[in-house]
Image 1 (cartoon, one colour):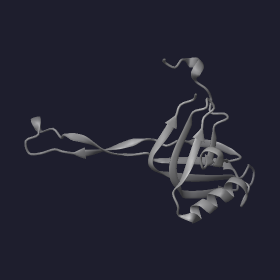
Image 2: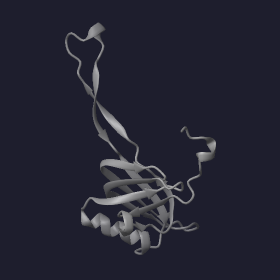
Image 3: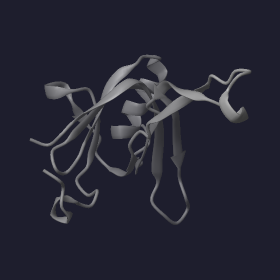
Image 4: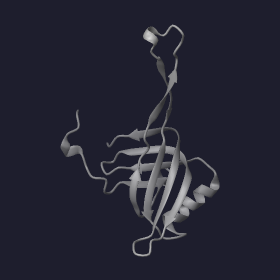
Length: 142
C-alpha cells in the first residue's frame, strides 16, 4: 500500500541510542539527528572500443556513510560520557535510530568525531559523528 500524507510526520520523538533490543540505551537529549546517506561507487569499465567514445560504468561498492547527532551538553555526563567512552574504545558497536512511527534503523558503527560547544549566551551542545560499518537494516513499523 502506498504511503499517504497522513503517514508523514515531524522528527519529534525520534530516538538515538547504543545497543539493540533489551540492551538498548537511548540518549537523553538529542536535538538533531542526521541518519546515514547511502551512496555507491561507480567503476570505470571504459575500453578502447567503447561505443561512440563514451565512458562505460558499472556499479561498485556501497557505502552507508555517517550518522551525526547534536545534543544538549552536560559535560562528562549522560550522552557526553557515552560518546567519550565509545570514542576511546576503538570498537565497532551496534547503534539504533528509532523513528516516531515505530520503524528502526539499526547499524554497526564507531565514533569518528566528538565535539563540545560552550557559547557564552546560549545552551551548551555536544556533537558526534559515527561511521557506519556494513549495511544498515531498516525494520519498518509494525
